[in-house]
Image (cartoon, rainbow, N blue to C red):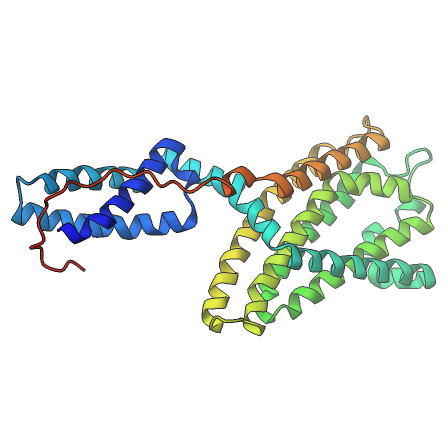
Length: 335
């Protein structure tokens, strides 16, 4: 059993770190080692109970395995902490690591938006093809003094929200087409938004239009960029796996894509709440709605930029409880 002491000591060190700082501060490598070392220690304990039932090593292993079991199989509060760690640390850290596909998503949507905007300015008849009919002719029927009637505020906000959620799902799922489908979806969505913006610009309603769109639209755009980045993370490893096999590269990219798409869900949910309660508010001035957009955008960027940095920089824990000496070396090999 003596030759297994190093593994026991490593397990004790990981447990000490988790018990002192909390399991959510463990690194990914420590978590993976915890599972492996726990299984080995449990196997060693079964052997020790058979051949050394009253030995010092058996008592030590019993205590060590019990601590590891309690940590690994913690009840719901631990799962809630894991959920907190996911969104407070893992998601923003993954977003920062995926800045290239995130930037590519933003550039593609921006490019599509510019094309759509200038296409409508150069040929207003294109609005018949690019702007949904229910959003096209409202200026002819809006009452004087109320450019966007209450029912129209809800209509346009809801229509764009539903469209963006659908686009996010498509951008992620079409990543499997080596990212080509993702790129086309982002370009097309930008084209439609740009065309819509140009349509209201020509009608002299840009300020009011963006006051309706931006309070929830800022977070929706951030969520769309995440969904697009997730699609590229899914497809690009199939094109350029690097030093890994394509299968290994795809699995790694899929894990990162999954985290990114999970990170987009709260953004869509908060955007939906803003669309439901703030966008239709006639009592809130247009400048007030621009203020809401500024605050939500600043909070979103701060979350991406700062979230999880302390946990990511936490020093590795090396404390360990030494196993007892003199345990002998007569044990048979344990898998």
